[in-house]
Image (tube, rainbow, N blue to C red):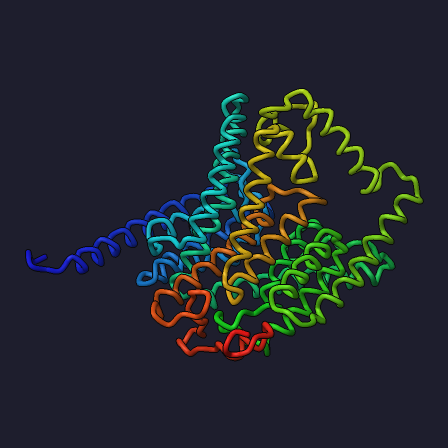
Length: 467
């Protein structure tokens, strides 16, 4: 390079060098891991994991000029909850995909991060610092590994989403997520139809494309349904296919009979209703069956007096977790304590109880503070970008009041969605730094750069002059 070459040229070459290094490193690691899994751990879970890793390898090979496309290739794999099962670890294929995407986003994503993203990262860092005490007090391997894993599921997911949205790939990321969700939804419906044909009208546990729990498929599809319903104009998604996809997803969620998924969707729909203004037919479509399903199932289980149904079982679990927490109330028993302590050999099925038992009152206070902070930050974001982000994140914490919280797919996906929204907003700000609205934010545009301020204003019930 000539001595008089501009600094920009040097930065471009450095970025290309990092891109090539990361790309070929992922290719080598992914090839070795996929080969090991398929040869040494033969079976259905290994096959699914191998396919997911192979998809990432393909993304590495075919996207030599678009390094962030590696993160895009990870979007469908985020919905694969099957255990990777290599090296004696308990990570899922989703975790592997998220880690690969995170490495790409950190090395090749845009800087600096926006004010909103930095605030969310700081809130998560506060929680991580608080849980560091339980890692020190309870020294076992799973505790330390989960500390990093929990950080990846929130901050890592936010950074991945940010990098994708900031690079202008929001449309492709959301398309990949909706496509993956439709595949899972179709498998759920097929399994349900076959189950109903046999006279069993209970909850559907899908077998296609791989075995899944009803609560997993219900909550995962709920996030995808939010994308299809909101279809933010800046993402460039066409309602000609997002609308049919939405109904496919809703049918699958209903067949799963996942109560927490429906309740989370209702809360998300209320958020959308408040943020946009006006009426929401989806809210009515969701609220009536959700309330009926939840109340009728709980009453039926209470009247049965069956101590082994989900209602009585959860009450018993809550009592056991509370009694267990009292033995280490300040710093808890350690993250993933159920792997090493036979006293309570299961993951508590409620977010705050799990955090209290794992990280004590110190961790619980930081956890609550983190979620309040997330809500405040996203509530203040421009409605064009913040509505979907806030709905997805709040839907997750509502779901976790009735089931597990620290579960890879269900935790990472809503934060990836939020990161994409924040990244897209930052992209809009950078492309039109002087063209701002009354709130100091640039008006949203579609992927071709065309402004849609007036249609959006009508969607949220405002006039063109902001009144």
